Amino acid sequence: MFKFFSQLGSYILFLKKVFAKPEKSRIYFRQLFLEMEKLGLGSLGIVIIISIFMGAVITLQTAYNLENPLIPTYLVGLTTRDSMLLEFSSTMVCLILAGKVGSNVASEIGTMRVTEQIDALEIMGINSASYLVLPKIIAMMIFIPFLVIISMFFGILGGYLAGVGFHAIAPADYLYGIHYFFVPFYVTYSLAKSVVFAFLIVSVSSYYGYFTEGGALEVGRSSTKAVVYSSILILTFNLILTQLMLT
Image (tube, rainbow, N blue to C red; front, top):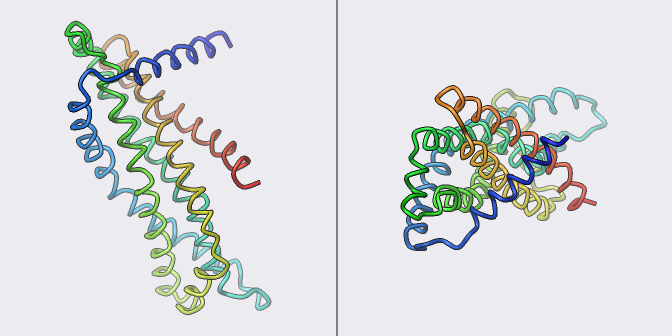
């Protein structure tokens, strides 16, 4: 328990250092676009692929388990739509990004720590935590909502292709289910969750990378811790935000 509170306090102090006023805003602004390209655009491919398959699986599983003639078939499209909007496109995608982006950030900053590049930045009078971490946090908080919207689109598209391609549902029924009783707040809810998850992924991963001690072996351990704790926090805040926003 003492170790938990010690790490929590260290994490809060780390965030205070990260959000300190930048020395030169122009440099940070340029770095922001580089991080958006590396962390955001670099994750676009895996998000699209996973979303298509998630939508396809949801559609087929729902169609094959709703063969009761008393249940309308358009519920397959409705289930796919709401599953992607409420949970899969935000929580599942961010869990996957916790593995991809989180390990990347932790290993990058951890390597800079063990090779004394961060110490060199500090000697030059640069706030290393802010310079290395703040652009990453802002970049992912801006870009992840776009990834979530793209995931929603390709998830529903994947469901359509699988449902129609495997003759599990008629195209008209699937499209009717997508439009039936649409709640726009579900999109807002999903995007709000994704912004919180983006902050957790980058800040936690950066924390473990920044305080890495040792050599290459410790960098690997820091990356593992970053992914594990980011995933746990995503699931925890998913529960909290769901309770706060959907009740």
